[in-house]
Image (cartoon, rainbow, N blue to C red; front, top):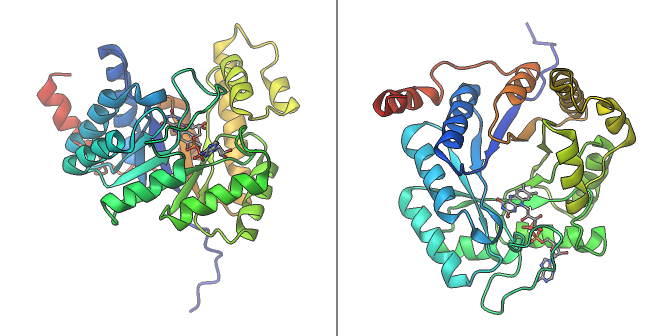
Length: 308
Ligand code: FAD
């Protein structure tokens, strides 16, 4: 008997964390990792602070994930404000630790997003050059790169922006993760442009659950991402009502990812902000269920050892 049911593509997720600054933040990060690990993410990534400012902390977090969990970590790496030799040395250290996947980025200078970028003569000038550098250290590295559905604010137009993405792919990137966005039409139009340019790697939408609408709005203006009017209206008047805000945030995020699945998207990258609550709920809505054996056993053992 033939199976006539329509098979939906399997949903795959990845989670992004940032390196903690204090023991208390380390504990919340680890709680989030422990909660999300059983959802069997394809990988978990750890960000690198502006200008390499979290170099040691990123390395520590990635190493801890590698040693104490069954999760596959990806280390974000930026090349701004560093020489090629300095960046290559960081890469060689990661390689020794067993890291095989990098999110290769140009990054912003320590003055933050929006500050004028000046390429160093002895440095990698963008994500495409860094991708090539990584591949020359180890051709087997897996490389993810950034993509911008609303184009990067420094790009004069979409053609220039997508041309740089093409160079990243030509140099060995096999996945692009997008800057977060709230209007799925923009994402879909961007993917169409990318495909027309002959780029066929997955363009994984970066999804940010809105824990604090005011903060996100401020951040959006610095990175050139737009906030649709309907979204602002959803959060209107909720500044002092965290409980309702969190329900609205879950509903907004669920609507966005479900709409993306209807548009054929099956891979999602969540900017977790080191919090599991909203992300876990959204993954549940996407149909993911915890696999008790996935990733978490080693975490529990590590916790026992650390007396947590
Ligand atoms: P690229 O894609 O290499 O370039 C971005 C733009 O810069 C280009 O479109 C072009 O207009 C311009 N440009 C490129 N090369 C040159 C050049 N040689 N001269 C002049 N202009 C040029 N930031 C962090 O600090 N740490 C992180 O961990 C981090 N993780 C991120 C993860 C994702 C998925 C995304 C989407 C962004 C992340 N960022 C991170 C932010 C990122 O660093 C900034 O958006 C930064 O401004 C651009 O980095 P990029 O790799 O996207 O740049």
